[in-house]
Structure formats: C-alpha cells, structure tokens
Length: 186
Image 1 (cartoon, rainbow, N blue to C red):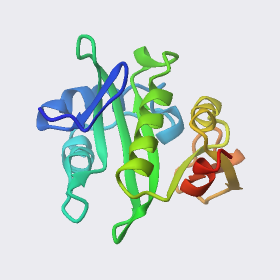
Image 2 (image 1 turned 180 degrees about the vertical axis):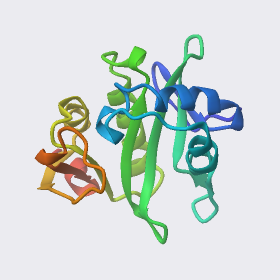
Image 3 (image 1 turned 90 degrees about the horizontal axis):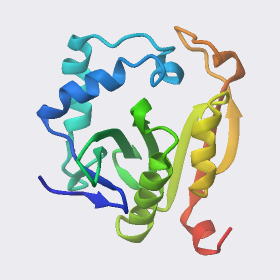
C-alpha cells in the first residue's frame, strides 16, 4: 500500500474498502463524535453510502485524495484519519485541515504530529498558500492542536444548525495559517 506521508510515529496512506470497520468503530464512539454530531451513532448504511465514498474519493485534478488513514508506524494500529482538502475544487491553494482520531490515541500528540506534517507538505510540495480549520468554540483540545500547529484564530461565528448539539450555543471558531506568515516566522 502506498504511503502519502510519514512522520516519526505515523503513516498516512490512502483509504481502502478494508478500512470500513475501523471507520465505523471510530464514527460510533460517542466521545470521538461529541463535537461532530453530539455523539450520535452513525448507521452502517450512512457509512457505506456517504462516509466511505468521501474518504475513498480521488480528486483527479489534484492527482491525489484529500483524506488519509493514519496508522502507527510501529505495529500498524489504526489511529484515525486526517483531512487536507481544498476548500474549493477549482483551487488547491486553500485547504481545510481536519482530523478524527480514536480515543485510544488521544493525548499522545498524534493530531499535532500528523497536522504539522500535512501543513509542511502542503506549503513545501503541494502549492498550498492557506490552511484553515474549524471546530466548536468549546472544543479546547482541537483548538490547542491548531495553535500548536501555528494556526491563529481568525474568527468566531455561529451557524443555525438544524440539529444543535451541546455546546453549539457557543458557536464555532475558524483558524488559519498563511504561507507568508509561516515563512516570516509569525
């Protein structure tokens, strides 16, 4: 299986159909999904009809995918997934960074390690000029990862969600890192 990116402890690789069981378990952990959908379970049908096709989708104009399965380099344990997806399919210079990791891998620095590596590859090899990431304002762990990766809080906003979840009343935050700021050491 080809590797997209390696870090000191992680391998990021394209998803395969064989990853469906890992993704199903990840997306059905209420703690993992707390800030995504309030911890509600994901049906197998939704996983197979919507989630897996999105994770498996090649972007021919990019020559690559936008989501990668993450595994521990030692032992190959499934850690979760990372997203480095263009905000607009016609422009790959601005991307959204995202990550969803198994609860067993929390607190080990994997989110920061994988995100930093993606940002480095994005600015260094992929022609990215802007990295953005969003989360609920109350998701302090994810916000801390963004800050450790050099992203700064750009704005706080609220949306009118059809199915609000606990904490959504506090809104969301958008973080960003520009290539020019990173190069200038800001």
